Amino acid sequence: MSMVTSQLSISLDGYVAGPEQSLQDPLGRGGEQLHEWVVGLESWRAQHGLSGGEPGVDADVVEEATRGVGAYVMGRRMFGGGDGPWDETWRGWWGDEPPFHVPVFVLTHHPREPLAMAGGTEFHFVTGGVHAALDAARKAAGDGKVAIAGGASTVRQYLTAGLLDTLQLHIVPIVLGAGERLLDDVGDVRLEQAAVVAGPTVTHVTYRVLR
Amino acid sequence: MSMVTSQLSISLDGYVAGPEQSLQDPLGRGGEQLHEWVVGLESWRAQHGLSGGEPGVDADVVEEATRGVGAYVMGRRMFGGGDGPWDETWRGWWGDEPPFHVPVFVLTHHPREPLAMAGGTEFHFVTGGVHAALDAARKAAGDGKVAIAGGASTVRQYLTAGLLDTLQLHIVPIVLGAGERLLDDVGDVRLEQAAVVAGPTVTHVTYRVLR
Image (cartoon, rainbow over all chains, first blue to last red; front, side):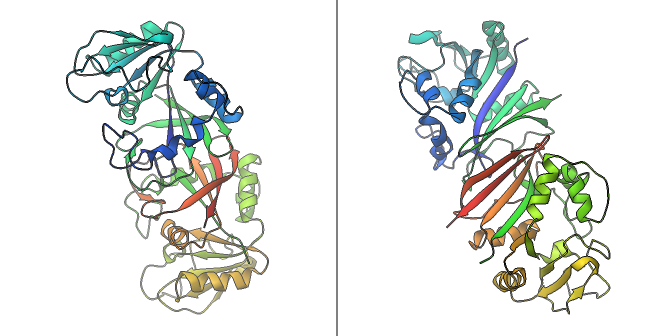
Protein backbone atom coordinates (compact mmCIF):
# COMPACT_ATOMS: atom_id res chain seq x y z
CA MET A 1 0.00 0.00 0.00
CA SER A 2 1.24 3.50 -0.74
CA MET A 3 3.43 5.25 1.82
CA VAL A 4 1.72 8.37 3.14
CA THR A 5 4.10 11.23 3.70
CA SER A 6 4.03 14.88 4.52
CA GLN A 7 6.58 17.64 4.83
CA LEU A 8 6.28 21.09 6.31
CA SER A 9 8.47 24.03 7.19
CA ILE A 10 8.20 24.79 10.90
CA SER A 11 9.57 27.61 13.04
CA LEU A 12 11.73 26.85 16.04
CA ASP A 13 8.74 27.65 18.24
CA GLY A 14 6.54 25.17 16.38
CA TYR A 15 4.53 27.35 14.02
CA VAL A 16 3.75 26.39 10.43
CA ALA A 17 1.97 29.68 9.72
CA GLY A 18 2.08 33.11 11.30
CA PRO A 19 -0.78 34.92 13.05
CA GLU A 20 -3.67 36.65 11.24
CA GLN A 21 -4.02 34.01 8.55
CA SER A 22 -6.74 34.79 6.06
CA LEU A 23 -8.01 33.56 2.72
CA GLN A 24 -5.81 36.22 1.10
CA ASP A 25 -2.80 35.56 3.33
CA PRO A 26 -2.78 31.84 4.16
CA LEU A 27 0.77 31.96 5.57
CA GLY A 28 -0.10 34.65 8.12
CA ARG A 29 2.12 37.50 9.29
CA GLY A 30 5.79 36.54 9.00
CA GLY A 31 4.87 33.10 7.65
CA GLU A 32 6.66 33.70 4.35
CA GLN A 33 9.95 33.48 6.28
CA LEU A 34 9.23 29.77 6.73
CA HIS A 35 9.62 29.28 3.00
CA GLU A 36 12.54 31.57 2.18
CA TRP A 37 14.93 28.61 2.16
CA VAL A 38 12.98 26.92 -0.65
CA VAL A 39 11.97 29.49 -3.24
CA GLY A 40 15.39 30.01 -4.82
CA LEU A 41 16.19 26.32 -5.22
CA GLU A 42 16.80 24.73 -8.60
CA SER A 43 14.53 21.74 -7.89
CA TRP A 44 11.68 23.93 -6.60
CA ARG A 45 11.97 26.18 -9.62
CA ALA A 46 11.98 23.18 -11.96
CA GLN A 47 8.74 21.89 -10.36
CA HIS A 48 7.24 25.30 -11.06
CA GLY A 49 8.41 25.31 -14.68
CA LEU A 50 11.23 27.77 -14.03
CA SER A 51 14.87 27.39 -14.97
CA GLY A 52 17.95 28.29 -12.93
CA GLY A 53 18.21 28.43 -9.17
CA GLU A 54 20.51 26.99 -6.57
CA PRO A 55 21.58 23.36 -6.52
CA GLY A 56 22.76 21.78 -3.28
CA VAL A 57 21.60 19.97 -0.17
CA ASP A 58 18.31 21.87 0.17
CA ALA A 59 17.50 21.38 -3.52
CA ASP A 60 18.13 17.64 -3.11
CA VAL A 61 15.78 17.52 -0.12
CA VAL A 62 13.01 19.17 -2.15
CA GLU A 63 13.63 16.90 -5.11
CA GLU A 64 13.62 13.80 -2.89
CA ALA A 65 10.38 14.85 -1.14
CA THR A 66 8.48 14.97 -4.41
CA ARG A 67 10.19 12.03 -6.13
CA GLY A 68 7.83 9.09 -6.48
CA VAL A 69 4.75 10.98 -5.33
CA GLY A 70 1.82 9.51 -7.26
CA ALA A 71 -0.93 11.66 -5.77
CA TYR A 72 -1.44 14.53 -3.36
CA VAL A 73 -4.13 15.34 -0.83
CA MET A 74 -4.70 18.94 0.21
CA GLY A 75 -7.15 20.94 2.27
CA ARG A 76 -9.58 23.43 0.83
CA ARG A 77 -7.73 26.39 2.27
CA MET A 78 -4.53 25.37 0.53
CA PHE A 79 -6.33 25.09 -2.80
CA GLY A 80 -8.05 28.41 -2.18
CA GLY A 81 -11.22 29.81 -3.61
CA GLY A 82 -12.95 30.60 -0.33
CA ASP A 83 -14.84 28.40 2.10
CA GLY A 84 -18.23 28.23 0.43
CA PRO A 85 -19.67 26.73 -2.75
CA TRP A 86 -17.26 26.89 -5.67
CA ASP A 87 -16.70 29.80 -7.93
CA GLU A 88 -15.83 27.65 -10.95
CA THR A 89 -13.43 30.25 -12.28
CA TRP A 90 -11.09 29.54 -9.32
CA ARG A 91 -8.44 27.07 -10.48
CA GLY A 92 -6.01 27.19 -7.53
CA TRP A 93 -3.13 29.51 -6.67
CA TRP A 94 -0.66 28.04 -9.16
CA GLY A 95 -1.68 29.28 -12.59
CA ASP A 96 -2.32 27.06 -15.62
CA GLU A 97 0.47 24.60 -14.91
CA PRO A 98 0.55 23.74 -11.19
CA PRO A 99 3.70 22.15 -9.75
CA PHE A 100 2.11 18.80 -8.83
CA HIS A 101 2.04 16.95 -12.20
CA VAL A 102 -0.13 14.12 -10.74
CA PRO A 103 -3.69 13.86 -9.38
CA VAL A 104 -4.45 16.10 -6.40
CA PHE A 105 -7.40 15.35 -4.11
CA VAL A 106 -8.86 18.45 -2.52
CA LEU A 107 -10.89 18.08 0.69
CA THR A 108 -14.06 20.15 0.48
CA HIS A 109 -17.66 20.25 1.65
CA HIS A 110 -18.80 21.34 -1.81
CA PRO A 111 -18.89 19.02 -4.83
CA ARG A 112 -17.18 20.08 -8.02
CA GLU A 113 -16.23 18.42 -11.28
CA PRO A 114 -12.56 17.41 -11.69
CA LEU A 115 -10.25 19.98 -13.19
CA ALA A 116 -7.49 18.93 -15.60
CA MET A 117 -4.60 21.35 -15.78
CA ALA A 118 -1.53 21.60 -17.98
CA GLY A 119 1.47 19.48 -17.02
CA GLY A 120 -0.42 16.51 -15.62
CA THR A 121 -2.03 18.00 -12.52
CA GLU A 122 -5.71 16.97 -12.14
CA PHE A 123 -7.65 18.40 -9.22
CA HIS A 124 -10.34 16.10 -7.81
CA PHE A 125 -12.77 17.41 -5.22
CA VAL A 126 -13.62 15.00 -2.40
CA THR A 127 -16.55 15.59 -0.08
CA GLY A 128 -16.30 12.32 1.84
CA GLY A 129 -13.62 13.34 4.35
CA VAL A 130 -9.99 12.45 5.02
CA HIS A 131 -10.34 8.67 4.71
CA ALA A 132 -12.20 8.92 1.40
CA ALA A 133 -9.64 11.35 0.01
CA LEU A 134 -6.76 9.10 1.04
CA ASP A 135 -8.43 6.03 -0.46
CA ALA A 136 -8.87 7.85 -3.76
CA ALA A 137 -5.30 9.15 -3.63
CA ARG A 138 -3.87 5.68 -2.91
CA LYS A 139 -5.77 4.29 -5.86
CA ALA A 140 -4.50 7.04 -8.14
CA ALA A 141 -0.94 6.77 -6.83
CA GLY A 142 -0.57 3.08 -7.60
CA ASP A 143 2.92 2.13 -6.44
CA GLY A 144 3.77 5.76 -5.76
CA LYS A 145 3.67 7.66 -2.49
CA VAL A 146 0.74 9.76 -1.36
CA ALA A 147 1.82 13.16 -0.09
CA ILE A 148 -0.37 15.22 2.20
CA ALA A 149 0.43 18.64 0.79
CA GLY A 150 -1.13 20.77 3.53
CA GLY A 151 -2.24 22.99 5.08
CA ALA A 152 -1.31 22.39 8.65
CA SER A 153 -4.78 21.40 9.81
CA THR A 154 -5.04 18.79 7.07
CA VAL A 155 -1.66 17.32 7.99
CA ARG A 156 -2.73 17.33 11.64
CA GLN A 157 -5.91 15.44 10.77
CA TYR A 158 -3.96 12.70 8.97
CA LEU A 159 -1.41 12.55 11.78
CA THR A 160 -3.99 12.22 14.56
CA ALA A 161 -6.00 9.69 12.53
CA GLY A 162 -2.89 7.48 12.39
CA LEU A 163 -2.79 7.66 8.60
CA LEU A 164 0.63 9.25 8.16
CA ASP A 165 3.73 7.06 7.77
CA THR A 166 6.39 9.75 7.73
CA LEU A 167 6.55 13.43 8.56
CA GLN A 168 9.46 15.55 7.39
CA LEU A 169 9.99 18.83 9.19
CA HIS A 170 12.15 21.60 7.79
CA ILE A 171 13.19 23.34 11.01
CA VAL A 172 13.65 27.03 10.30
CA PRO A 173 15.57 29.11 12.87
CA ILE A 174 12.94 31.78 13.33
CA VAL A 175 10.64 32.52 16.24
CA LEU A 176 7.18 33.54 15.05
CA GLY A 177 5.66 34.00 18.50
CA ALA A 178 2.10 33.34 17.34
CA GLY A 179 0.17 31.62 14.58
CA GLU A 180 -0.81 28.03 13.80
CA ARG A 181 1.12 25.25 15.49
CA LEU A 182 1.41 21.88 13.77
CA LEU A 183 1.60 19.75 16.89
CA ASP A 184 -0.99 21.32 19.17
CA ASP A 185 -3.80 18.96 20.21
CA VAL A 186 -2.50 15.97 18.27
CA GLY A 187 -2.90 13.68 21.26
CA ASP A 188 -0.62 10.74 21.89
CA VAL A 189 1.46 10.77 18.71
CA ARG A 190 4.68 8.74 18.84
CA LEU A 191 7.49 9.51 16.45
CA GLU A 192 10.93 8.13 15.72
CA GLN A 193 13.77 9.99 14.04
CA ALA A 194 14.50 8.39 10.67
CA ALA A 195 16.82 10.77 8.82
CA VAL A 196 18.53 14.12 9.37
CA VAL A 197 19.89 16.39 6.67
CA ALA A 198 21.71 19.60 7.58
CA GLY A 199 20.98 22.32 5.07
CA PRO A 200 22.96 25.55 5.10
CA THR A 201 20.26 27.48 6.96
CA VAL A 202 17.62 24.95 8.02
CA THR A 203 17.61 21.37 9.36
CA HIS A 204 15.53 18.69 7.64
CA VAL A 205 14.40 15.87 9.92
CA THR A 206 12.26 12.95 8.79
CA TYR A 207 10.22 11.18 11.46
CA ARG A 208 8.51 7.81 11.22
CA VAL A 209 5.08 7.85 12.82
CA LEU A 210 4.76 4.82 15.10
CA ARG A 211 1.48 2.96 15.48
CA MET B 1 34.87 38.20 26.84
CA SER B 2 33.51 34.75 27.63
CA MET B 3 31.09 33.14 25.21
CA VAL B 4 27.72 32.59 26.85
CA THR B 5 26.09 29.34 25.83
CA SER B 6 23.15 27.22 26.75
CA GLN B 7 21.83 23.84 25.74
CA LEU B 8 18.48 22.24 26.37
CA SER B 9 16.53 19.18 25.33
CA ILE B 10 13.29 20.21 23.67
CA SER B 11 10.30 18.23 22.47
CA LEU B 12 9.14 18.47 18.89
CA ASP B 13 6.27 20.63 20.10
CA GLY B 14 8.63 23.02 21.85
CA TYR B 15 8.45 21.95 25.49
CA VAL B 16 11.48 21.77 27.76
CA ALA B 17 9.45 20.41 30.70
CA GLY B 18 6.15 18.59 30.97
CA PRO B 19 2.99 19.83 32.71
CA GLU B 20 2.47 19.81 36.48
CA GLN B 21 6.01 20.86 37.31
CA SER B 22 6.64 21.11 41.04
CA LEU B 23 9.54 21.50 43.43
CA GLN B 24 9.57 17.72 43.75
CA ASP B 25 9.13 17.08 40.02
CA PRO B 26 10.90 19.91 38.17
CA LEU B 27 10.70 18.10 34.81
CA GLY B 28 6.91 17.75 34.96
CA ARG B 29 4.84 14.84 33.73
CA GLY B 30 6.58 13.05 30.87
CA GLY B 31 9.51 15.47 31.04
CA GLU B 32 12.02 12.73 31.87
CA GLN B 33 11.58 11.48 28.27
CA LEU B 34 13.43 14.63 27.16
CA HIS B 35 16.57 13.33 28.86
CA GLU B 36 16.46 9.63 28.06
CA TRP B 37 18.95 10.11 25.24
CA VAL B 38 21.58 11.44 27.64
CA VAL B 39 21.57 9.39 30.82
CA GLY B 40 23.27 6.29 29.43
CA LEU B 41 26.10 8.13 27.72
CA GLU B 42 29.73 7.58 28.64
CA SER B 43 30.52 11.31 28.80
CA TRP B 44 27.47 12.10 30.91
CA ARG B 45 28.32 9.27 33.30
CA ALA B 46 31.93 10.45 33.55
CA GLN B 47 30.74 13.96 34.49
CA HIS B 48 28.70 12.34 37.24
CA GLY B 49 31.64 10.24 38.48
CA LEU B 50 30.31 7.03 36.96
CA SER B 51 32.19 4.64 34.71
CA GLY B 52 30.91 2.81 31.62
CA GLY B 53 28.16 3.98 29.31
CA GLU B 54 27.78 4.44 25.58
CA PRO B 55 30.31 6.26 23.44
CA GLY B 56 29.26 7.77 20.12
CA VAL B 57 27.84 10.89 18.54
CA ASP B 58 25.54 11.82 21.43
CA ALA B 59 28.34 11.30 23.97
CA ASP B 60 30.58 13.57 21.89
CA VAL B 61 27.88 16.26 21.84
CA VAL B 62 27.58 16.16 25.62
CA GLU B 63 31.34 16.21 26.06
CA GLU B 64 31.68 19.13 23.64
CA ALA B 65 28.92 21.13 25.38
CA THR B 66 30.73 21.03 28.71
CA ARG B 67 34.28 21.34 27.36
CA GLY B 68 35.81 24.69 28.21
CA VAL B 69 33.00 25.77 30.49
CA GLY B 70 34.58 27.92 33.19
CA ALA B 71 31.42 28.75 35.12
CA TYR B 72 27.71 28.02 35.16
CA VAL B 73 24.66 30.11 35.96
CA MET B 74 21.46 28.41 37.10
CA GLY B 75 18.06 29.36 38.42
CA ARG B 76 16.93 28.70 41.97
CA ARG B 77 14.46 26.02 40.86
CA MET B 78 17.19 24.05 39.15
CA PHE B 79 19.33 24.17 42.28
CA GLY B 80 16.35 23.21 44.40
CA GLY B 81 15.69 23.75 48.07
CA GLY B 82 12.36 25.52 47.75
CA ASP B 83 11.50 29.10 46.91
CA GLY B 84 11.94 30.77 50.29
CA PRO B 85 14.86 31.51 52.62
CA TRP B 86 17.49 28.79 52.59
CA ASP B 87 17.44 25.61 54.58
CA GLU B 88 21.23 25.40 54.89
CA THR B 89 21.14 21.61 54.85
CA TRP B 90 20.04 21.72 51.16
CA ARG B 91 23.13 21.31 48.99
CA GLY B 92 21.54 20.76 45.56
CA TRP B 93 20.16 17.69 43.81
CA TRP B 94 23.55 16.21 42.91
CA GLY B 95 25.02 14.72 46.09
CA ASP B 96 28.46 15.53 47.50
CA GLU B 97 30.21 15.70 44.13
CA PRO B 98 28.07 17.61 41.62
CA PRO B 99 28.83 17.22 37.89
CA PHE B 100 29.87 20.86 37.30
CA HIS B 101 33.47 20.91 38.60
CA VAL B 102 33.68 24.73 38.30
CA PRO B 103 31.95 27.69 40.02
CA VAL B 104 28.15 27.75 39.68
CA PHE B 105 26.22 30.97 40.23
CA VAL B 106 22.69 30.37 41.54
CA LEU B 107 20.08 33.10 41.01
CA THR B 108 18.12 33.62 44.21
CA HIS B 109 16.28 36.26 46.20
CA HIS B 110 17.81 34.97 49.45
CA PRO B 111 21.46 35.46 50.38
CA ARG B 112 23.57 32.48 51.38
CA GLU B 113 27.25 31.82 51.96
CA PRO B 114 29.11 30.01 49.14
CA LEU B 115 29.16 26.25 49.28
CA ALA B 116 32.28 24.33 48.25
CA MET B 117 31.60 20.78 47.13
CA ALA B 118 33.83 17.86 46.27
CA GLY B 119 35.25 17.73 42.73
CA GLY B 120 35.64 21.48 42.22
CA THR B 121 32.03 22.66 42.16
CA GLU B 122 31.45 25.81 44.21
CA PHE B 123 27.93 27.16 44.48
CA HIS B 124 27.68 30.94 44.79
CA PHE B 125 24.34 32.55 45.54
CA VAL B 126 23.61 35.76 43.67
CA THR B 127 20.80 38.09 44.70
CA GLY B 128 21.53 40.85 42.19
CA GLY B 129 19.74 39.37 39.16
CA VAL B 130 20.75 37.94 35.80
CA HIS B 131 23.30 40.62 34.84
CA ALA B 132 25.05 40.39 38.20
CA ALA B 133 25.18 36.61 38.03
CA LEU B 134 26.60 36.71 34.51
CA ASP B 135 29.22 39.29 35.47
CA ALA B 136 30.35 37.10 38.36
CA ALA B 137 30.35 34.00 36.15
CA ARG B 138 32.38 35.72 33.42
CA LYS B 139 34.94 36.78 36.00
CA ALA B 140 35.17 33.26 37.40
CA ALA B 141 35.31 31.67 33.93
CA GLY B 142 38.33 33.67 32.77
CA ASP B 143 39.00 32.51 29.23
CA GLY B 144 36.39 29.76 29.53
CA LYS B 145 32.76 29.76 28.42
CA VAL B 146 29.85 30.61 30.67
CA ALA B 147 27.04 28.09 30.40
CA ILE B 148 23.50 28.92 31.42
CA ALA B 149 22.56 25.57 32.91
CA GLY B 150 18.81 26.13 33.26
CA GLY B 151 16.01 25.87 33.97
CA ALA B 152 14.01 27.04 31.02
CA SER B 153 12.89 30.35 32.53
CA THR B 154 16.48 31.26 33.34
CA VAL B 155 17.61 30.46 29.79
CA ARG B 156 14.67 32.47 28.47
CA GLN B 157 15.71 35.46 30.61
CA TYR B 158 19.25 35.42 29.21
CA LEU B 159 17.95 34.93 25.68
CA THR B 160 15.48 37.82 25.84
CA ALA B 161 18.06 40.05 27.55
CA GLY B 162 20.35 39.54 24.54
CA LEU B 163 23.03 37.97 26.72
CA LEU B 164 23.23 34.55 25.07
CA ASP B 165 25.70 33.93 22.22
CA THR B 166 24.69 30.39 21.28
CA LEU B 167 21.77 28.11 22.05
CA GLN B 168 22.04 24.39 21.38
CA LEU B 169 18.77 22.48 21.17
CA HIS B 170 18.60 18.71 21.41
CA ILE B 171 15.41 18.06 19.44
CA VAL B 172 13.70 14.99 20.87
CA PRO B 173 10.98 13.30 18.75
CA ILE B 174 8.29 13.35 21.38
CA VAL B 175 5.10 15.37 21.65
CA LEU B 176 4.45 16.45 25.25
CA GLY B 177 1.24 18.35 24.53
CA ALA B 178 1.60 20.63 27.55
CA GLY B 179 4.21 22.02 29.93
CA GLU B 180 6.81 24.78 29.77
CA ARG B 181 7.85 26.08 26.36
CA LEU B 182 11.31 27.54 25.89
CA LEU B 183 10.44 30.02 23.17
CA ASP B 184 7.11 31.44 24.32
CA ASP B 185 7.13 35.19 24.90
CA VAL B 186 10.77 35.68 23.98
CA GLY B 187 9.96 38.61 21.70
CA ASP B 188 11.94 39.39 18.60
CA VAL B 189 14.77 36.87 18.92
CA ARG B 190 16.81 36.26 15.76
CA LEU B 191 18.78 33.06 15.36
CA GLU B 192 21.06 31.55 12.76
CA GLN B 193 21.84 27.88 12.36
CA ALA B 194 25.50 27.27 13.18
CA ALA B 195 25.92 23.48 13.44
CA VAL B 196 23.83 20.33 13.09
CA VAL B 197 24.71 16.92 14.50
CA ALA B 198 22.48 13.93 13.84
CA GLY B 199 22.39 11.62 16.83
CA PRO B 200 20.82 8.18 16.56
CA THR B 201 17.54 9.28 18.16
CA VAL B 202 17.71 13.07 18.53
CA THR B 203 19.00 15.99 16.45
CA HIS B 204 21.41 18.50 17.97
CA VAL B 205 21.26 21.97 16.44
CA THR B 206 23.38 24.88 17.58
CA TYR B 207 22.04 28.38 16.87
CA ARG B 208 23.91 31.66 17.02
CA VAL B 209 21.85 34.39 18.62
CA LEU B 210 22.02 37.49 16.41
CA ARG B 211 22.11 40.98 17.91
